[in-house]
Amino acid sequence: MFIEGGWSPCCVLHDIAYWHGGDRKLKDIADLDFKKCIKDRGYPIMSFIMYYGVRFGSISPIKYGFRWGWGSDPDTKIKLDSQYFEL
Image (cartoon, rainbow, N blue to C red; front, side, top):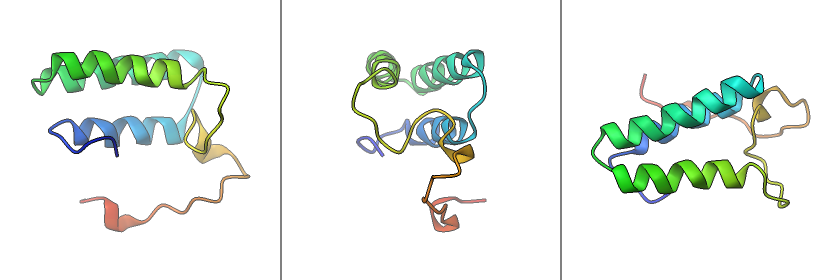
């Protein structure tokens, strides 16, 4: 997770949304909710940086495992481990 801070719960929710995926509108909503969550936690500058980081990262020519809808990709070999979540 990007630098531990008070915005970590926002990152978890955003990562879950990216895992789940959906249409383009859902991606836009997930990214805007991410930005709002960070800003609402008192980090307005970081919300701007993180928002544009995920937006530009999604169009990067460098492909990595964590992309929109990666959880529904049958080629994904990542196993979710419940130790990372407090339920």
